[in-house]
Amino acid sequence: MNVDFTKPAGIQRKQYRDFTDRINPKPNVLVNVVWAFVVGGIIAAIGQGFLNAFLAAGLPVLESGAMTAVVLIFIAAFLTGLGVFDDIAKYAGAGVIVPITGFANAMVAPAMEARNEGLVLGVGARLFTVAGPVLVFGIVVAWLTGLFYFLFR
Image (cartoon, rainbow, N blue to C red; front, top):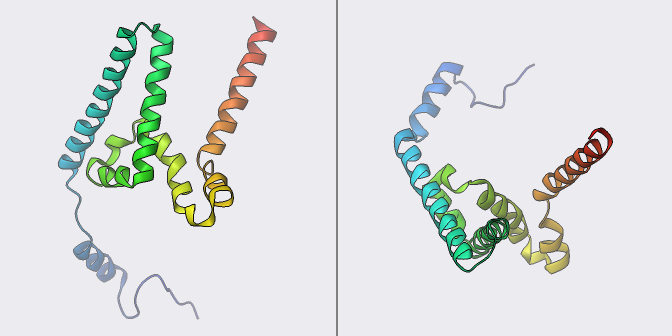
């Protein structure tokens, strides 16, 4: 006997779809897009402010860009640790997933969930669960690119 446990007994597929459509909240796409645009723009403006400050302090362009990335990563990681990043993400949606802040959040969030397991086995072990594969493949691709450049230049 085939039993479908994905829907309550006695409800047909169309009835179930109608039921879930009624109880699930409808996302307001326009509001979500505007918030993502505004918050992403604010993050970009903050980054530009840091870049301008580092340039005004006399750092060269490359070092200023690197320092800006470090500061944005630190701020996103710090806000994730405080639990504020998730509150911002509830309203901003995709706006906070600017690559650098989203990456910092992806690194710190699993570690914060495991902090009750201790600093080494909890935080330390989980810090790179999401970022680890990204770093490994990034390093491998960089190494292969360097190898091909060396062999075929």
